[in-house]
Image (spheres, rainbow, N blue to C red):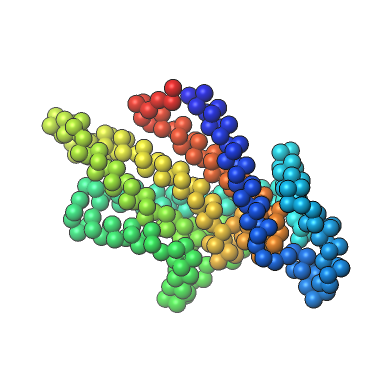
Length: 314
């Protein structure tokens, strides 16, 4: 196990290196110039060149990349070109919101998907199963931004309810915090529940067809015991894979949702950085999210061996 973990940690290096190179190149390909955005109508060629020199944007790309990545190695993600403020403290401050929204959305997704997936498997090919599969297909098909806009429209027109604007920390005011994050979390959780629901159904159906399940049924063990003690435990492995990936995708998927609901999280930070061509902000934030993504996937892989003793990493 320790050897496997060490190998996976070493794989972090090329993966994150590839992320840094890709993001850096993409940000430099995007049309637009932060010097023009900052100077506005006063953007003469001389002033633009002076500002580019001040930011180091006149240097060759390889030197710009090295200046940035060498700082990342020592925990310095640089300063925002727009505000001049250090990026790392701002990221950590906003991460608490994004992390809370991600966990909240993931819990909603699991609460919807796993029971419905189990029910669909038990009621296979019935009207209930067909209805659940139809709902899961809708969840997979509808984009986050469309669902968010539709939900705001329905709540405002038919229930005269408008999602609260702003953000209050959980420790500061738990009730207000949950009220602010509830609708965005439902949007994210509902969108992610579709794929998890389908995977749960498929895994349960596969396990229910195994010989040891038929043996347990032949011994007279109750259907509930067979389902929850034997079938679900063995079917959870592929479901856990989807859950691990969902956590990573939710961190990135908050970008549009945070913008729609005016939540000052990492997603809004990335989008603002892109709009303002603030390269260090975008590069640092995406690298931060990618690091969390690969870490979550490593934790999920390690959990496999504890959930299923048949899995060995020797």
